[in-house]
Length: 352
Image (cartoon, rainbow, N blue to C red; front, side):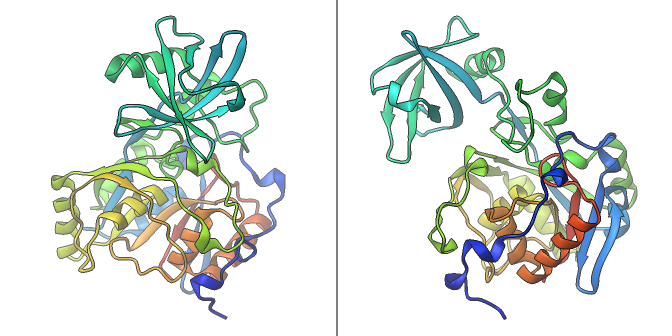
């Protein structure tokens, strides 16, 4: 039975995930990851290296070129310690952040950042959602360098790192596409790609392009409402240049399909595409929430990972390929030993 979006609850996107199916390390090499092809006529167990054989000359692969920065900081206010996870810069120049022990900070307090002697932040405001605004004493490249000196990667909480991120994570948690620094979390579908796989795609006549969506802290936060239409997505910053938009539109005009690498690329493309299917240049924030019933305007196929139960990402993939089909495919993946989540295996989704 097809449910209307307003009737969907969190239970409609739940499934049984044994803890041992969650990957704590990536496949090595990256392009040795498995890939489940979820298609009209069933399922096919493949490898990510099979991707070129699923695409056609003239198709265009669109990936997210955001680069993860060390968004976790340790701060002090007098003798009190405050853990910070940065989200994104705001229009007023302050940074939105989540603070552990937020009760210890007040508007107007100055925080000293551990590990960067010259970096301080003034608490500009506190919001009802528990976030705070931080006005740093540095800006631009100097600020990003200070984050790199003092910060740590904000790895997903389901990746077991009792002593914090390892040196290997600094490389493992960046994609081959990463260019533009600003993401709290990696666009994890891109983690499967290697120069060898990209060369194979080029040889198959597949075009490639990149867009930018800086993945924010909202990707780590659970949905806290039962009726999913009541959920509100956290805004994320994105950009599609005029040249990129025209490259994608030209591929579409010539009969090529748009293959999104990851839900982040898909959400940005859909945010920038008009009702006629034309991708427009985009620069700003998107909070697009895709649920079953959504009509896709830009993307024809999707490469993505296996997502958490009750997550907005599972809702998105259910919108793309069908909720019952996705839940059936996930049950197969669990039984077949696929590895789940950020460091896990991949899916290739045909539309439902």
